[in-house]
Image 1 (cartoon, helix red, strand yellow):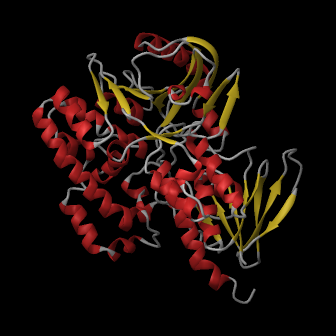
Image 2: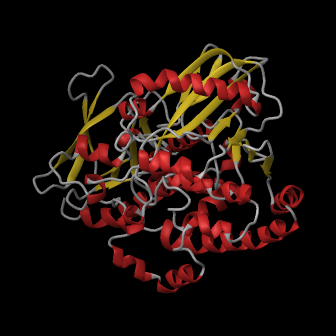
Length: 501
C-alpha cells in the first residue's frame, strides 16, 4: 500500500485525505495547529465560541462526496440547517432585500420589492446560471490542467460558454437582466470572492452567485467548525492518521528530485522532530508560502513571482451582551457608493470611503456559541492586501475599530462587548497567507484555470498542491474540489512512480 502525506488539516487537506483513503492509500495528515480546520479553527474565549474561518457553506454535495469516499455521509455526521433568508441585504436608502431559499420564494421577494418585470427576469436568470454551472463544473472547474491547450479538449463546451456570454463582464451581464440597481449589487457582489470588482470579473464567475444564491446557504449545528471536525473524525475512523502540533519544515527528496517524505518540527520548535517517509505529498500551504518555505531552490510559477492578490479583509469577532433584533444569520450592508468603493480598494489601495460590510450572527443558529442573552458577531470589511495597499495598519487598526463600532451601533447591533478578536492583513500575513490576504491569488484571466499555478510540481515528482492558491480557486466549494483534484493527480502518479523503487 502506498503512503501519502497531506500537509494541513484544513478543508482542502481533509478532502484530499478522504479521497486518497477512498483510493486505498495509507494517508497521514500533518497539521501545525492543535485541531482540524486550517483557517476555520475554533476560538473559545469568555464563554463565547467563534469560527475564525469561512462563514458561508454552499454546495454541501462536495462535502458529502469526500465523506462518501471514507464510508459515511453528510446526513450521518452533520446537522445542517438551510438558512432562509440566506442573506439580509440592507441598502443606503434604508430598504432591504432578502435572499430567500428556493426559486418561488425568491421570485416572490423580487416581485414584492422590485416589481413584476424583475421577477420575470429572475426566471431566465436562474436558467442562465444553472446552464453556466452545468457547463463549467465538469469541463473547467472539476478538472486538472496540464497546459492552456487543455481548454481545447472540450471545444463544444468552450463554444457554448462564449455563446452564453460567459467571457463578457459580470457587472454588465447582471445589469442587462435586471432593472433594480439593488439587484445588480445583490447578484454581483460575489465577484469579491474571486478578488475582483464586478466590472472586471468575467461573467463565468456568476457560478459563484449560483452556488451562493440559488443552491442555498447552509449552516451546521455547532458552527462552521463542525464541518472540518466531522471530516477529520470520518477520515480517522477510516484509518487516516492525523497528527496535530506538527509543522512540516522541509521536503525529503532523492538526488533526482523525487519526493520521498517530509521533515517535521514539534510543538517546542526544536529541530527535526521526525522524518515521515512517503510516496507522495499533498501540500495545502498558501502557494507563495509553500514555494518560499519548502521549495526555496525552485523558481516559482509566474503567477507566484508576480502575483495579483485578492483584496484582504478585516474581520472582527465580537462576543456581546444582547441579541440582535430583525437581523438574519448573514447580513450584507451595502454602502451608497459602489464602483467608487472598488476604485478605493483595487486601484488606490486605500480603505473604502463608503464601504460595504458583512455581519454574520452565528449564535442565532448555534446557541452554544454564546451565553444566554448574548451573541457572537462576525464583522467583515474588505480592505487592500499588503502587496498593493497603502494602509499603515499600526495606526489604522484603532481607527477602523472605532469606525466599525459606530457602524454596528447605527445598524442596530448590540455593542456591549464582553470579548473580541480583531484580525487585520498583518495578522493574515503572520499566519502564512501571502500578501496578507486569506483570499489568495485573484481570479484574473491570467490566474484562472490552466493559467493558475498548477497543482503538480513536475520538478519535484510526487509533490502536489491543494487549497485556494491552486486550481480551481478560492472559496469553500473550490478548496474541497482542489483536494479531490490533488487525489486524482496522485492516482495517476503513483503506479508509475512506484515502479522500480
